[in-house]
Length: 275
Image (cartoon, rainbow, N blue to C red; front, side):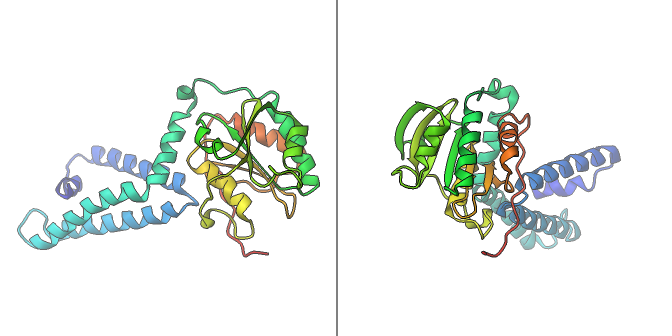
């Protein structure tokens, strides 16, 4: 494999080499942009540096001769090991990438309608935020959330602001975890969400925000989270968390998230010390 890579730099067709370099650069740029703000970005940069060192060492060690045969053998073995390790290291990112491809507009078969859901969530979220009642509302999109909802209490009711407000009322036995919404129906309440890694959420935010991000890592769900401490409203999607959203901007932000023509990873907030 490394012999073929080394031959890349010995070709005589300059135009072909230039085109291939542009393609390689574009692939790396897209990969780094996709991984931006995740732990995988640092890993990918490290792997690129190691592969570059291996290729250069083979180039200058005389890859076409018997010189440094043992070193070349070790370098080739290391390159093969790195190729296998990448599949394991980037397993979460690869799953997320495949999910995004599957939910693309030309594969998803069109966007769903949320005509009743958005006004109900908007009204409920404003009430919950003003009263500083914590809330987690998971909105299903293309990826079914059946496995997730099995951990909760079945509701199967048409969505309404009053029902959401009553579920997240502090004295309600269902208020502590999440509500899952599919289309215009509340599917389940008291749903346990997967917790994201602490590095994906600013340190000043708690487990509710980690759960909001965690639910979006391997699905295309949109999660609305209301802070119990501050009443701040945020939207989580694709493993990222938005900045706080004002009351009068929330409905527009939610519609934009639900009907976005392209799936782009929101830039996570920078880590800050707990306050």
